[in-house]
Image 1 (cartoon, rainbow, N blue to C red):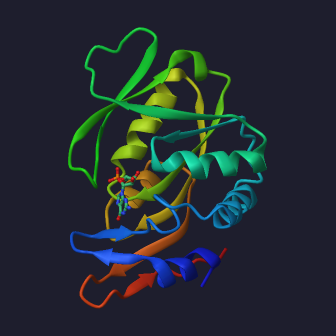
Image 2 (cartoon, rainbow, N blue to C red):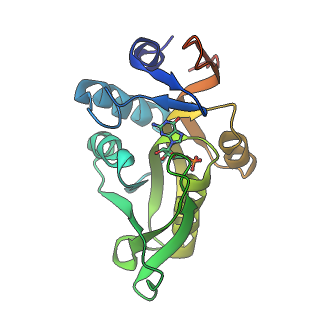
Length: 195
Ligand code: 5GP
């Protein structure tokens, strides 16, 4: 088990509805030492890539992206969730359906902060059905920038997002991949990774 899998086993709580709660260390209270290990690991996995910008989505991705950015020495841009439907012109816009909140949001990034010269690493906390990632990818594409890689902290491998994104040809690295989890007994099964 890697450092993250160990922490998920210790402090993660499996909820009904295929939701893993990790709010004691990842997305409410944040363990910054763990974030540093996460950032270092992303740097190791994407060492061969020339990355000049990290893109994430508010809110839970921001902390992870910021610590990771220290290892790449690059700025972070986060996509903002917006309820407004009239955001054109100066913004890249994508529609994203939230897995946890079951609602649709438009996510926006100012055109000032993404351009065709950018080589982007996308970072997020969870990958479930891949809707958030598809939105971020479409924003990078709209900007004419390139997606160099995608770094996810926890992929729920029993949902469709990971396979869809890999089938599209993206280099997707998930630090922990959960193949099964059970709300009744709290058991979590991780996919073996040769990393
Ligand atoms: P997707 O768009 O891939 O379906 O869902 C990704 C987003 O939903 C993530 O950014 C994350 O915020 C949230 N999410 C999805 N599944 C879980 C989960 O099991 N636990 C938590 N805490 N968040 C999740």
